[in-house]
Structure formats: C-alpha cells, structure tokens
Amino acid sequence: MPLAPETILILLVLLVVVAMTWLHHARVGAGRLPQRRPLPALDTLRAAIGRGAETGRATHVAPGASVLGAADGGRATTAELIAGLLVAERVASEAALNGAPILVSSGDAVAHLALRGSVRQAYQMAGQAQDYDPSRVQLLAHNDELAYAAGVTTLYRQHLLEASALIGGFNQEFLLLGEEGARRDLPQVAGTTSSVALPLMMLTTPATLIGEEIFAAEAYVTTARLPQARLLTQDVLRTVVILLLIGGFVYSLVQPTLQLPPLPLSR
Image (cartoon, rainbow, N blue to C red; front, side, top):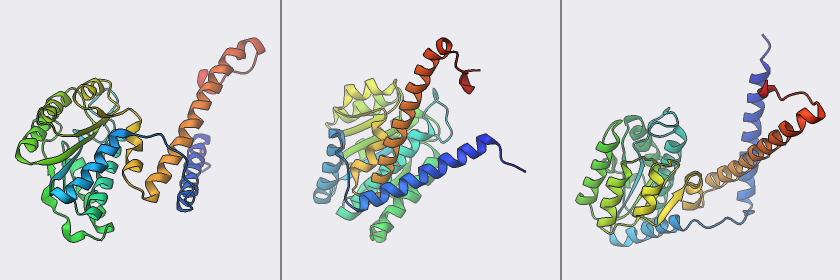
C-alpha cells in the first residue's frame, strides 16, 4: 500500500530534523558555537547552584501544574511541560556535579514520574548516583493549580532555599507562590508562555523568561552538547517557519494580480 503524500512529507521533515540535530551536535563538539544573546535570568539560577554547594541550601525547580496533552488555553501545553522537565534535568545534573542539593516539585502525577526518572538519570550520568534522593522529588498536587501553588508556598516555609526556578506551565496561581517568594526575599527565576502568568511573573521577580526563552533555557544552564544542538536546530526551524509565513503572505498578495494558482491550504 503506497504512502500518502502527507505521510511522506512528515517523514522527510523528521529526517531533516534528525540530520540537523546530528550536524549541530558535531558542530558543538568542534567548538563552533554562535554568539548568543544573554539571558540574565539564568545567570541567577547558575549562581544559586554554585552558592548551594557552599551553603547546603537547596535550589527548588518546578515545571508547574503542567499536564501532558493539555491544549492551548488550558493549564499548560505539552511543550511547556517538556521545557520544564529539561530544565529540571539540567539543573539536577549541574547540582550533582557541584555537590549542591536540589528540591523538585510538580503538580501532575505523570510529570512527577517523568521528573523522578530524569533527575535520577541526571545523577547517574554525573557519576553521583549515590547522592540521588527520591524524597527530594515531590508531588504536591494533581491537576489542581491552586493546590499546587499552596504546596509550593509550604515548601518555601519548610525549607531554607537558595533559589526557586519556576519554569513551565503557570497561570494566575503564580501570584500566590510568586508573592510568597518575594515576601521571603527568595531569588526566583520564572518563565512561561502564558499571557496570564507573565505579567504576574514580571511583578514578583526581575528574573523572568518570556515566551520562547523557556525553550532555550536548558542550553543556557549547561554546557552539554545535546542541549546546544537542540537549541541550534530550533533556531533553524524557527527561521524556516518565519520565511515560509512571509513567503505565503507575499504570494497571497500577488496571486490574484498575476493569476497564479492558489496555495493548497487556501482552497
């Protein structure tokens, strides 16, 4: 049975993405990295991990009450959750290498299981498997944003933290935990794509990642090759999508005048 043209196109796109990732991986291995714009918010996170090795205070990391498969307009998209999981994994890896404690929380059972696996793997890859403590990866609520926010504020009261990185899916509940952190003068690094939560983040912490910056965060936290390769691939794909959108817009303007055939998606 022959494959449909759409299936063939999807397979070709996947092959191109995989090939670009491997190409960029080799590029990073050769030390050929482009100049990146600074993200001062992540400087705060890296500094907290370094201080934690000296003070013994944990750095809290959380992807929020993110839910796999949630649609836009709901709590959080899957992309935000994955971004938060990757940041948690990279923070755990850097903390393991520096001997700094961490505390990880989530507001969804599936995200909790993913966090336990990724954090444990990060410690194993760093050669510090004996330092992994599953009790430091906590499930505070399940599919309840306000309950999760209340759980995080409880962590703030119970633990003397070095910093808190809240990167992933958040909405209006961020005001509750963000205000608690600001009241305790706790350095917070926050980031999301939600237009509801971003103003609240800007009000409670100067270290805020806006929109797509959360997807680049893992590459700024660590110097590992794979995150750098993923970031470079994302940049190329984003550029291609922008060019296609501009090209489609220009084509739609000149198509009636030049009597060109309409685009397939415009029929």
